[in-house]
Length: 302
Ligand code: 13P
Ligand code: SF4
Image (cartoon, rainbow, N blue to C red; front, side, top):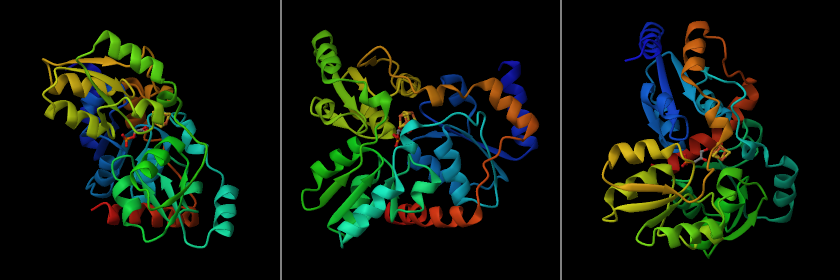
């Protein structure tokens, strides 16, 4: 083990820290984490944490969600600037307008959102539980914020509900085009296409499997296919290749990189463990209101 990894391990134990990492952060950061997973798995892990401190190797809405669910714990971020642009793509005015327009409305908020947006919503979802949760809601009308693509995908599977969409998107997934996928299929015709539901419907129509990052990883392991075209952020390649050393994985296009996630480095993990200074802070009234939809998600996803 390199010196930096040893120092991280020592400090982590000394200061009673649980390190959580999303599959999109760099491989070297995934290697030192206690738990690596998708957004839902990590929020569950944050709730069950026995440690006094959570260090979240991911983007700000992830650290914020961990703090919302664990007000008594210190939640640290290796880089306070690591952010998800989509988290800011929902407006409270949009929610208020829909509430005035539709009587039987549920406001469903993708976890990739700010605490400020969450507090105006009825329930949160992640890409791995959105279908189950929206289906379980008694409401006919669903305002889905902030991601339009995930909303449209869920809507396509639940025709009895009336969806109202917001125009937010993830640039990493939106920039994967149908043409990219068709060109990749031409190049590797025997490969299975695995896509994240943040991709556009045009891309999802070309996919053999659609699921969250954990879903994609599970499918690659279970499938009899030997070759795959992956339509999501390239951080997942570490887990895919580790679990399936004899299978071949291709990105659908050259650049499938989330800049926010890549801001998290081993050096920054070490520094924040030394200084314990980059903490998530939130006003208690905002935290309490944002906790309601997150806790409802954890309850309905069981
Ligand atoms: P999941 O972790 O639910 O797969 O979502 C991917 C993502 O974009 C996280 O930012
Ligand atoms: Fe946000 Fe997309 Fe990055 Fe996920 S991959 S954190 S949705 S920008």
